[in-house]
Image (cartoon, rainbow, N blue to C red; front, side, top):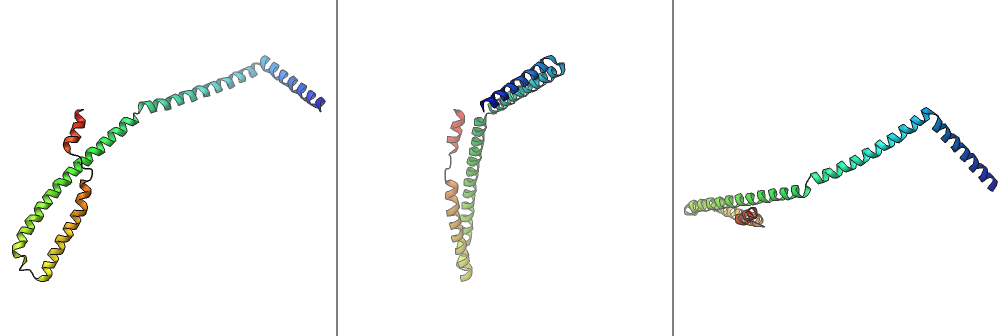
Length: 152
């Protein structure tokens, strides 16, 4: 077995030596070798530049700053929406009081069915407002608090 291994090693080494000698003396083989090395080098440099470009994009785009700006914008819209909702609720409250004041003097003259319908409408309005208004008031930010963040 050792004899076979020795022979195979010797043949392999001789073949390698002949190929190297041929590559060293043959102009076309030298050029092919140079082309292969150049292609590998260009590939390595391209991969390095691509990696550097990806890292550069991560640095160039301030994701934390963008996220903070988006959060501030969402917070500003939330504050403005809650402010408008409070204004609308105030107007709705005044309107309901005006309608109640106008109906109260003549309500007794309504037939029983109409009076019941008016009372059911009031109750339904009260239930809807009771379920909607507290949700709108949750986490309400006072305008002065939001403005003080900008001053800092």
